[in-house]
Image (cartoon, rainbow, N blue to C red; front, top):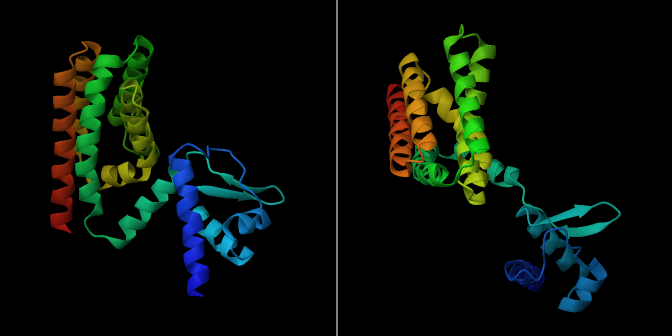
Length: 234
Protein backbone atom coordinates (compact mmCIF):
# COMPACT_ATOMS: atom_id res chain seq x y z
CA UNK A 1 0.00 0.00 0.00
CA UNK A 2 2.82 2.39 0.82
CA UNK A 3 4.47 1.77 -2.60
CA UNK A 4 1.10 2.41 -4.22
CA UNK A 5 0.69 5.75 -2.43
CA UNK A 6 4.27 6.89 -3.11
CA UNK A 7 3.90 6.08 -6.81
CA UNK A 8 0.66 8.06 -6.93
CA UNK A 9 2.41 11.03 -5.32
CA UNK A 10 5.24 10.73 -7.86
CA UNK A 11 2.73 10.96 -10.71
CA UNK A 12 1.04 13.96 -9.08
CA UNK A 13 4.33 15.79 -8.59
CA UNK A 14 5.44 15.06 -12.16
CA UNK A 15 2.20 16.31 -13.72
CA UNK A 16 2.24 19.43 -11.55
CA UNK A 17 5.81 20.09 -12.68
CA UNK A 18 4.76 19.71 -16.32
CA UNK A 19 1.97 22.25 -15.74
CA UNK A 20 4.41 24.60 -14.03
CA UNK A 21 6.82 24.37 -16.97
CA UNK A 22 3.91 24.91 -19.42
CA UNK A 23 4.54 21.49 -20.94
CA UNK A 24 0.90 20.79 -20.14
CA UNK A 25 -1.61 23.57 -20.79
CA UNK A 26 -5.27 24.15 -19.94
CA UNK A 27 -7.43 21.82 -22.02
CA UNK A 28 -4.64 19.35 -22.80
CA UNK A 29 -5.78 15.75 -22.65
CA UNK A 30 -3.78 13.40 -20.43
CA UNK A 31 -2.86 9.90 -21.62
CA UNK A 32 -5.35 7.24 -20.60
CA UNK A 33 -4.90 5.12 -17.47
CA UNK A 34 -3.16 2.29 -19.30
CA UNK A 35 -0.69 4.68 -20.98
CA UNK A 36 0.05 6.45 -17.70
CA UNK A 37 0.61 3.15 -15.92
CA UNK A 38 3.07 2.15 -18.64
CA UNK A 39 4.86 5.50 -18.49
CA UNK A 40 5.24 5.45 -14.72
CA UNK A 41 5.68 1.67 -14.39
CA UNK A 42 2.86 1.34 -11.89
CA UNK A 43 -0.60 -0.13 -11.47
CA UNK A 44 -3.70 1.50 -12.92
CA UNK A 45 -4.95 1.81 -9.34
CA UNK A 46 -2.00 4.10 -8.58
CA UNK A 47 -2.86 6.17 -11.66
CA UNK A 48 -6.50 6.47 -10.57
CA UNK A 49 -5.44 7.66 -7.14
CA UNK A 50 -3.09 10.25 -8.68
CA UNK A 51 -5.90 11.52 -10.89
CA UNK A 52 -8.20 11.77 -7.86
CA UNK A 53 -5.58 13.88 -6.05
CA UNK A 54 -5.10 16.15 -9.08
CA UNK A 55 -8.87 16.50 -9.44
CA UNK A 56 -9.22 17.44 -5.76
CA UNK A 57 -6.56 20.11 -6.29
CA UNK A 58 -8.60 21.48 -9.19
CA UNK A 59 -5.82 20.80 -11.70
CA UNK A 60 -7.47 17.97 -13.62
CA UNK A 61 -11.03 17.42 -14.76
CA UNK A 62 -12.38 14.05 -15.95
CA UNK A 63 -15.09 13.96 -18.59
CA UNK A 64 -17.09 10.74 -18.77
CA UNK A 65 -16.32 8.86 -21.95
CA UNK A 66 -13.66 11.37 -23.02
CA UNK A 67 -10.82 11.14 -20.52
CA UNK A 68 -8.91 13.42 -18.18
CA UNK A 69 -7.87 16.97 -19.07
CA UNK A 70 -5.83 19.77 -17.55
CA UNK A 71 -8.42 22.09 -16.03
CA UNK A 72 -9.04 25.69 -17.03
CA UNK A 73 -8.77 28.48 -14.47
CA UNK A 74 -11.76 28.23 -12.14
CA UNK A 75 -12.02 30.78 -9.34
CA UNK A 76 -14.78 28.75 -7.65
CA UNK A 77 -12.10 26.28 -6.53
CA UNK A 78 -10.39 28.96 -4.43
CA UNK A 79 -13.73 30.37 -3.35
CA UNK A 80 -14.77 26.98 -2.02
CA UNK A 81 -11.49 26.73 -0.13
CA UNK A 82 -12.10 30.14 1.44
CA UNK A 83 -15.60 29.04 2.45
CA UNK A 84 -14.03 26.09 4.24
CA UNK A 85 -11.63 28.42 6.03
CA UNK A 86 -14.55 30.52 7.20
CA UNK A 87 -16.27 27.46 8.61
CA UNK A 88 -13.19 26.24 10.48
CA UNK A 89 -11.56 29.48 11.66
CA UNK A 90 -12.75 32.26 13.95
CA UNK A 91 -10.28 34.82 12.56
CA UNK A 92 -10.50 34.37 8.78
CA UNK A 93 -13.06 37.14 8.23
CA UNK A 94 -10.79 39.81 9.70
CA UNK A 95 -7.64 38.33 8.16
CA UNK A 96 -9.22 38.34 4.70
CA UNK A 97 -10.25 41.94 5.25
CA UNK A 98 -6.62 42.79 5.95
CA UNK A 99 -5.56 41.00 2.77
CA UNK A 100 -8.27 42.80 0.80
CA UNK A 101 -6.94 46.11 2.07
CA UNK A 102 -3.48 45.36 0.71
CA UNK A 103 -4.66 43.95 -2.61
CA UNK A 104 -7.36 46.49 -3.40
CA UNK A 105 -5.25 49.47 -2.40
CA UNK A 106 -2.68 48.50 -5.03
CA UNK A 107 -5.35 47.57 -7.58
CA UNK A 108 -6.88 51.02 -7.17
CA UNK A 109 -3.49 52.68 -7.60
CA UNK A 110 -3.01 50.84 -10.90
CA UNK A 111 -6.59 51.55 -11.96
CA UNK A 112 -6.02 55.30 -11.63
CA UNK A 113 -2.97 54.90 -13.86
CA UNK A 114 -4.29 52.45 -16.44
CA UNK A 115 -8.10 52.58 -16.69
CA UNK A 116 -9.59 53.52 -20.04
CA UNK A 117 -12.45 55.99 -20.37
CA UNK A 118 -14.87 53.09 -20.86
CA UNK A 119 -13.62 51.33 -17.74
CA UNK A 120 -13.93 54.54 -15.72
CA UNK A 121 -17.53 54.91 -16.94
CA UNK A 122 -18.26 51.36 -15.79
CA UNK A 123 -16.83 52.07 -12.32
CA UNK A 124 -18.93 55.23 -12.10
CA UNK A 125 -22.04 53.35 -13.23
CA UNK A 126 -21.73 50.85 -10.37
CA UNK A 127 -21.02 53.64 -7.88
CA UNK A 128 -24.22 55.41 -8.97
CA UNK A 129 -26.21 52.16 -8.85
CA UNK A 130 -25.06 51.58 -5.29
CA UNK A 131 -26.05 55.12 -4.33
CA UNK A 132 -29.49 54.66 -5.87
CA UNK A 133 -30.19 51.59 -3.75
CA UNK A 134 -28.50 53.06 -0.67
CA UNK A 135 -30.93 56.01 -0.77
CA UNK A 136 -33.98 53.83 -1.41
CA UNK A 137 -36.10 52.23 1.31
CA UNK A 138 -33.94 49.45 2.72
CA UNK A 139 -36.02 46.44 1.79
CA UNK A 140 -34.19 43.09 1.56
CA UNK A 141 -34.30 43.37 -2.23
CA UNK A 142 -32.79 46.88 -2.28
CA UNK A 143 -30.14 45.92 0.26
CA UNK A 144 -29.11 42.98 -1.92
CA UNK A 145 -28.97 45.19 -5.01
CA UNK A 146 -26.89 47.73 -3.07
CA UNK A 147 -24.46 45.00 -2.03
CA UNK A 148 -24.27 43.63 -5.58
CA UNK A 149 -23.49 47.08 -7.01
CA UNK A 150 -20.90 47.60 -4.27
CA UNK A 151 -19.06 44.39 -5.15
CA UNK A 152 -19.27 45.23 -8.86
CA UNK A 153 -17.74 48.65 -8.11
CA UNK A 154 -14.72 46.95 -6.54
CA UNK A 155 -14.51 44.39 -9.34
CA UNK A 156 -14.63 47.13 -12.00
CA UNK A 157 -11.72 48.87 -10.26
CA UNK A 158 -9.75 45.62 -10.33
CA UNK A 159 -10.47 45.31 -14.07
CA UNK A 160 -9.29 48.88 -14.56
CA UNK A 161 -5.94 47.98 -13.01
CA UNK A 162 -5.20 45.84 -16.11
CA UNK A 163 -3.73 43.21 -13.79
CA UNK A 164 -5.57 39.92 -14.22
CA UNK A 165 -4.50 38.62 -10.80
CA UNK A 166 -6.35 41.45 -9.05
CA UNK A 167 -9.45 40.63 -11.10
CA UNK A 168 -9.20 36.95 -10.21
CA UNK A 169 -8.73 37.81 -6.54
CA UNK A 170 -11.91 39.92 -6.40
CA UNK A 171 -13.88 37.32 -8.37
CA UNK A 172 -12.67 34.62 -6.02
CA UNK A 173 -13.66 36.37 -2.79
CA UNK A 174 -17.21 37.38 -3.74
CA UNK A 175 -18.68 35.32 -0.88
CA UNK A 176 -16.06 36.75 1.46
CA UNK A 177 -16.98 40.29 0.42
CA UNK A 178 -20.64 39.49 1.07
CA UNK A 179 -19.63 38.36 4.56
CA UNK A 180 -17.77 41.64 5.09
CA UNK A 181 -20.84 43.57 3.98
CA UNK A 182 -23.14 41.76 6.38
CA UNK A 183 -20.79 41.95 9.38
CA UNK A 184 -20.07 45.66 8.90
CA UNK A 185 -23.62 46.71 8.03
CA UNK A 186 -24.88 49.90 9.67
CA UNK A 187 -26.22 53.27 8.57
CA UNK A 188 -22.92 54.88 9.51
CA UNK A 189 -20.90 52.38 7.48
CA UNK A 190 -23.21 52.87 4.51
CA UNK A 191 -22.78 56.66 4.66
CA UNK A 192 -19.01 56.34 4.98
CA UNK A 193 -18.94 53.94 2.04
CA UNK A 194 -20.79 56.48 -0.11
CA UNK A 195 -18.30 59.21 0.79
CA UNK A 196 -15.25 57.04 0.19
CA UNK A 197 -16.59 55.67 -3.09
CA UNK A 198 -17.09 59.22 -4.33
CA UNK A 199 -13.54 60.21 -3.35
CA UNK A 200 -12.09 57.06 -4.93
CA UNK A 201 -14.06 57.78 -8.09
CA UNK A 202 -12.82 61.38 -8.26
CA UNK A 203 -9.20 60.30 -7.83
CA UNK A 204 -9.51 57.65 -10.55
CA UNK A 205 -11.08 60.16 -12.93
CA UNK A 206 -8.20 62.54 -12.20
CA UNK A 207 -5.70 59.68 -12.66
CA UNK A 208 -4.34 60.56 -9.21
CA UNK A 209 -2.99 57.13 -8.30
CA UNK A 210 -1.67 58.00 -4.84
CA UNK A 211 -4.91 59.62 -3.71
CA UNK A 212 -6.99 56.80 -5.20
CA UNK A 213 -4.92 54.24 -3.29
CA UNK A 214 -5.11 56.28 -0.07
CA UNK A 215 -8.89 56.58 -0.33
CA UNK A 216 -9.35 52.85 -0.97
CA UNK A 217 -7.09 52.04 1.96
CA UNK A 218 -9.00 54.41 4.23
CA UNK A 219 -12.33 53.01 3.01
CA UNK A 220 -11.40 49.40 3.74
CA UNK A 221 -9.83 50.40 7.05
CA UNK A 222 -13.21 51.76 8.15
CA UNK A 223 -14.87 48.51 7.06
CA UNK A 224 -12.22 46.60 8.99
CA UNK A 225 -12.96 48.66 12.10
CA UNK A 226 -16.68 47.93 11.72
CA UNK A 227 -15.96 44.20 11.48
CA UNK A 228 -13.81 44.34 14.62
CA UNK A 229 -16.57 46.25 16.42
CA UNK A 230 -19.14 43.67 15.31
CA UNK A 231 -17.00 40.75 16.51
CA UNK A 232 -16.41 42.48 19.87
CA UNK A 233 -20.16 42.94 20.41
CA UNK A 234 -20.74 39.27 19.66
